[in-house]
Picture 1 (tube, rainbow, N blue to C red):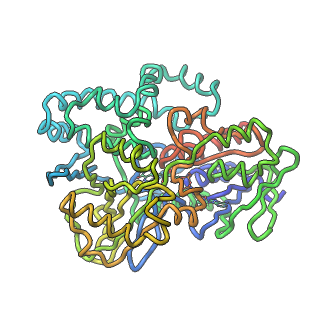
Picture 2: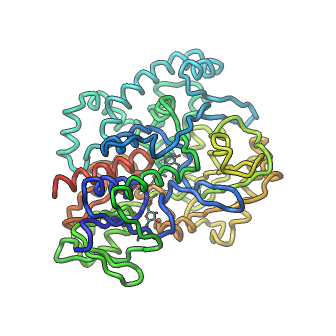
Picture 3: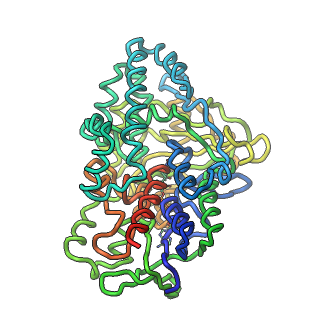
Length: 497
Ligand SMILES: Cc1cc2nc3c(=O)[nH]c(=O)nc-3n(C[C@H](O)[C@H](O)[C@H](O)COP(=O)(O)OP(=O)(O)OC[C@H]3O[C@@H](n4cnc5c(N)ncnc54)[C@H](O)[C@@H]3O)c2cc1C
């Protein structure tokens, strides 16, 4: 054998698993399709600006701390965090602006301007959120949840999980409405459902507590989001791990139903005892393993999953400071509108008229990402893979201009006149760059019927020696869950070795 383990993809899940394997002395190779680490959590340089490709902040950063601590290391030796405060700026449709600071009492004061009753509910929401995150949902982040037995075990060990089980049954919308009455307050917390790629009506209720967890700290890494995977990759390489860039894996080599290596796009074959996948699970099973090598039940099961929604990204270099107040700005939208974007526009293959929901301003935290006095902005939107408006490659320019129009018309925000560099990454670009099928940025859809034991298992049941990490397994997309998925995969590999 050439290696103990080959990892397909240098995203956060793959790297987190690889770092732990190498640390324990497993001879490990990561094969990455692009020329750099990080996948959706990375950055690249364009006309003097450093743009983030996808993720724009880290929440629940203790999962990353746990990863480094499990190897006897400190996160601060690998990643230089910048705390984000205020967490959000908001612009309402009638031009009002307000911000939510990290401080809970400060946020309470802001909420009280809209509703005294909701300000009192905010205290209750924060209390429940703190308990739910720290004693219930947070506990599953680095624990195997791949089988019903695993889920029962984690439940028995953490009684608080039982208490908060109701938020797995309630949806995001009813959870928010249970606490808050004011439309403005509800709207200020409604966009977070799309952080796992679903509208408030379909998103599980526990995700609503993100609006609390952000108050436990939101961080940005100095040097751009790529500094996170670079830090994990450095730890991996210090333990003797190897990374092969520009090396897409095209096929998984099998000996019966057990992996014995991988084949790269140029035909090179690499032998290994184990293979860890960090790519979309549908691509993994249906293309790299091959339908013909799967048992009928596995073929049916993997085909039954929907891939997650895509998210076009607009990256802008500005010649001056933007007229914003926070690292993240939410262009106000009601819960109804957030649902209608999905049901009336996205599912009908129309580009939502609402435009970009979230504007991220990384140079607010780290000015070194742009030339002196200049700034970077990212605008994250929702849109289908095959819009009726036309092929993405043909409508990029029109799309960009329409997003500027919406910001000007609906929110009084003139960004267009200050743009000196612009780049649009459409769902097709995500597919080309990172091989995400249909531009799916969260792997598979992440509703409650497709999470934990209901998601493709971290230890493959169909193919021996194959392990899954990243957004397609465990708890789905997001920095903390995907790092957690790498920890879980490494634990299972240690148990099986
Ligand atoms: C627009 C956007 C905004 C986001 N914002 C946030 C945020 O603010 N906070 C947050 O927590 N999360 C955010 N996320 C989600 C988060 O970034 C992702 O869920 C997470 O980074 C995915 O990690 P992963 O381990 O699944 O790997 P991925 O990032 O999917 O990486 C997979 C890697 O595998 C490589 N690869 C694919 N196929 C092959 C192959 N055949 N051979 C070799 N290599 C291959 C790809 O090139 C890629 O590098 C955002 C995502 C997007 C897209």
